Image (cartoon, rainbow, N blue to C red; front, top):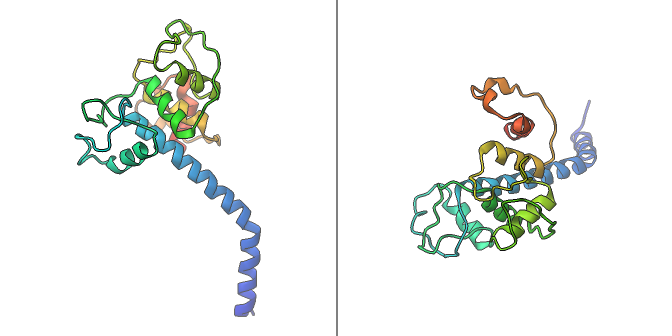
Length: 193
């Protein structure tokens, strides 16, 4: 027969054994949430100029996230006082947001045919490539002015996050065949998270 004291002691022993694993799990979850938040913000905004109040976010669902990201210097708005939260995001804009959010500073030399050092996003592209979360295309272009696709965003997210392979049955999605082979693993990881 267990007494209240032995139940309490068993609980304490259990907690001491699990505490390290639980704390590690919590830290991983916080990192996942932070990176996913950056990507969600990146897919809904385009940075350019900084304003304290934007005329187009008053009733937007992401208003709180946008203000927090602006206050942390991760994103900015446009010179006309707008933020354009529902506008598409380019590859270079996503790189800038992630680099600011994660405070990435390491660069690498780039050899993309469509990118030169005088373009505003050259160093953000360089940081993205150095960090390994973005690459160029087979034709040696970076395509920084192209809107980033959801599958490309999945690859970025997958690259930034630890991935635990699981077969989650991507066939359950009607557009599974439209996901490029190079993005399939990342799409599975994002759906799994």
